[in-house]
Image (cartoon, rainbow, N blue to C red; front, side, top):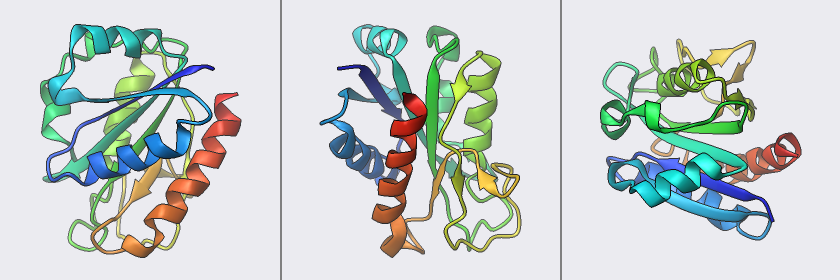
Length: 170
């Protein structure tokens, strides 16, 4: 079985909740590990660097910023060159309508600058927002979720995204 690592940063617990859901839905298809970036150890970093695939999770804070733990982590330690990676992000499309899930784009830029192959773009599933840096060519650069305002579509979007990822990872 191929190795897949989910690494996330979570302040309020929502991103961890989504990471746990993704983990439970992928554990039968991959050898999956899940890590919180805030408490990442050297052994866990080695698992990320040696994994076949990595899924990065973040929420958007402030005015389109990455979750705080990502801001303080030294990305130079993570090796994703030529590796297929995916991103999921959380945001609030009502209160932060002009920066909805912008952290996905910030993570995308970091990963592509490190020569990762980002897969898993995803359609807008009914969110209304004014602007999002992560929404390009009618798709998000990863899985965008609004748990606060649209909790009823979260699980279905995760399921659909995972089916897409399985095809794109292989």
